[in-house]
Length: 609
Ligand code: C2E
Ligand code: CA
Ligand code: CA
Image (cartoon, rainbow, N blue to C red; front, top):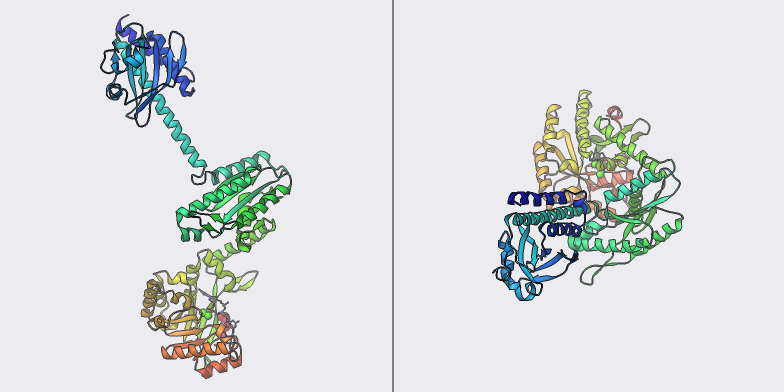
């Protein structure tokens, strides 16, 4: 047969084989068997085998050998580089080893005594298999009994077979990478547990599958307490170690029960109990969780760490509840467990959702009220102790609520803070204070100054002094009409930024007072260098005057301090005439409190002025 025709025939056979239905899906070994058997038949060759090179290239192992005559497969033989260096060099460097006379060919003759002669092999045709530029193995054809001259079509065909096996290798690598990727998407590499998404999918799927059936299920959410501080104290490696140890404990706990475990967050684990025939199973689980929480975990170097966990539990479906997901309910329960007693277990209660709803709407209303500038300042007069006349006013925020009346800051400031609205609220108060100052002037009811409370969020914004400057300009007010009250706690922090802010504010000419003085541990030396001209003695020290020894002692020393530093002094929260008398007698210049006047609306204050 002419060479070209033979070439075409051989390659066609290869195409037919590799494009056969499902060929690529076959397991590797079966693909290899197909290839070598077909090769043996097409070329009428005695033995065909595929060998795989070890990763260190020191050994090749026979993956499969086909004996044409007996139609049998073998595997497992191994050849070492140290025994056959010429051959190993040849497969690494040559495209093909066509040894017509294998006994004398320099590349294969080292096999003669141990392999070729005993097996009566006369000729060899080997093609190395490369994948990703690296030698991976070899396909090996051997003729038994008589010598054979390998022709060009045969050599080309065998080289193609090697390429084919190389493609199979690449495909396998790709599959393995894909599997690894899928694994990483679904499983947490640290603990090996399912990840949150995968876990939630399972919950959702189950919810749909079982629909609204009565079959109760439970979801437990377990959060490690104070994990952040463990991270800080021991570092990430130890913290990771702890997480793994904790996960293993949970695994041990859940293994015997029909439930699923996942790591649903950094330090949070979820347990899903799909079939909750009776609550006994759940009781057992929570009991064991509590106990587990009390047993210290061992970290490296024999050291033990006490680490507790708080658990939230929800049993669902919850009657009539379709909006809130079980995971959200479990999160709420876990949050409560953490707030109550750490290391405890808290079951979700349906009426929380009502509370949550009203909390949400309160938050929403507050945000809207701030956004729409509906919050207003109430004013509490500050009196001159000598003449008992009004010298200044403190602006105190109120929320005039349509149903609840004027809400005090104690109720909504923490929420505004949580919602990140303190700066907005502060700007609003500054603006309204300026507007009201203008009104007071216009109506001939002049006051010395208005004190405005400044939140830490405002003080940490470098645009504050610019904001105040432009407000003063806009309302045509002298800077001394505004006093800023800054809590001592903020001053005590000794931050260079806060200091520079205070200096910028002071250079505007606004007055500055330290609020709640005596509670914030500011150092006296620092105080001396602060651009502040007034102290407000905190109400807690005024309360016990004039009888309580310690309050008297503290009040006296604050008065002495203010005098020494040449600062003005205000006492807040004065409720009794004796307190007023005592403070006046001590030399405190300004007094403020219910004894003189409560905070009141702008209209009320206008009447009073
Ligand atoms: P604060 O600055 O120490 O204000 C004094 C608080 O004590 C005010 O409560 C005032 O109504 C109350 N008070 C005054 N005299 C007496 C008294 O004789 N007896 C008693 N029992 N209480 C008295 P309010 O208005 O509820 O404000 C509470 C806190 O909310 C303020 O404490 C201040 O820290 C904060 N705050 C109020 N308005 C604002 C504001 O516009 N911005 C910021 N950032 N905080 C504000
Ligand atoms: Ca104040
Ligand atoms: Ca105060």
